[in-house]
Amino acid sequence: MGINNLLTMKGLFGPKPLVEQFPQLGDFSNIINVIASTAFIFLPALIGWSSMRVFGGSQILGLVLGLVLMNPQLVSQYDIAKGHIPTWHIFGLEIKQLNYQGQVLPILLASYVLAQIEKGLNKVVHDSIKMLVVGPVALLITGFLSFIIIGPLALWLGTGITNGVTFVFEHAGWLGGAIYGLFYAPLVITGLHHMFLAVDFQLMGSELGGTYLWPILAISNICQGSAAFGAWYIYKKRKMGKEQGLAMTSGISGFLGVTEPAMFGVNLPLKYPFIASIITSGVLGAFIGANRVLGNVGVGGVPAIISIQKEYWLVYGICIIIAICVPFILTVFLSRFSKEETKELVDE
Image (cartoon, rainbow, N blue to C red; front, side, top):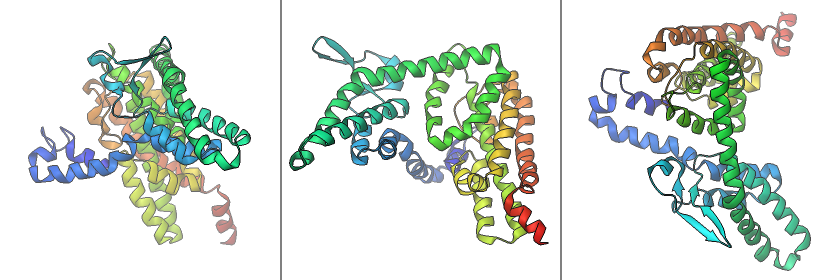
C-alpha cells in the first residue's frame, strides 16, 4: 500500500504522480493496489472469521455472514447520498438494503449474536441433524437480525462516535488529539481502527472540509516506524542479524504508512518500542489537536504531509520531525530497563 501511495500521490515527485509521468508504471501500480487492498475490501468477512473464533462459534459461518453483509446487491454506504435506497418490506417492516463493506461494528455485533445462537442450537438439536439445522438456521436468524436491528444500530453508534469526535476537537482539541494519538495503535491491534475511516469521510463531507483524525493517524504511523528503527539499533548492538533486517524493513514500512509489520513483528514483542511510540504519538496528537490540524484521507506515514491542508504544513512538519526522532531515542533509552538488557549489563 505504501508503494502504491508513492506511485499515485500528486505533488510528491512533481505536479503529476509517477504513474502519469511514467505510464509504464500504471499497470504495475494497479496490480500492487489489487494485492494490497483486497483484505480491506473484504474486511467484514475476515472479521467474521476471526471474531467467531473468539466468540466460540463456527468460523466458516462467521466468514459467510461477513460476505452476506457486503453482498454486491446491497447499496454501498458511500453511495447513500447519490440516490434512493431500495428497501425490503417484510411483515410491515421497511428494511434498508445497505452494504456494510469496510464496516467493523456491524459484523462484530452480528458475529457475537451468531455465535450465541449457534451454541444454543447445538445444545437442543440432535446430533443426527445438526449438520442440516444448526448452521443454516443460525445464519438465517442472524442475517435477518443484522439487516433489521444490528446494522442500523451499529450505524447509529458510528454516527454518535462521529458527532462525539467533532465535539471534542472543537471544544478541547488537545484532549481529543491526545486520546486518539495514544489509543490509535492499540486499536490497530484489534482491527477497530478501520471504523474510524467512516468518521474521516463523514468529517470530510461536513462543513469542516477535512478530518482531525487522519493527521494524527499518520503521526502514529511514523512513531511506530521510528520505534522499529530504535529496535534495529538495539539488535545491531546485539549482533542479531535476522531481527535487525526485520526491524529495518518494518521501520521503512511504518514510515510509508503501513505499521502492522513494525507493530506485530518488532514493537509488541519487545514491548518498550511500542510504549515509546504511543507515548510520543499521544503527546504529538495533543499538539496537533490543539492546533486543529485538518487533512484528508490519503497517504499515511511521512508522505502524509501531502494529505494535510497547506495552512498547517509548518505545524505538521515540526510534528513529523519529532515523530521521526523521539520514539527512536525513547526506545533506546527504555531498552536499558528491560529484563533482557539488564541481564546483559550485569553479565558484562
